[in-house]
Image: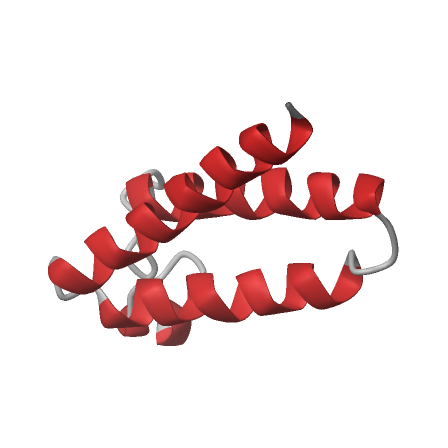
Length: 88
């Protein structure tokens, strides 16, 4: 049963990444794949760690799907385009 659950979670993760590539969100998808590789390397010790890493990677993929990373976002200074502050 655990293997079936992990298989479904990994499939969801890869479907999200493939969807990002098809939407031409290359930066977002590349960051997602790099994070997937890092999570896999960090949690490679045991079955419990594998389950934890798999779920963590899936949630990262889903978060990045709804909050995409852009190249401009990396270079934009904090508060540069912020409308929350009024000029007094």
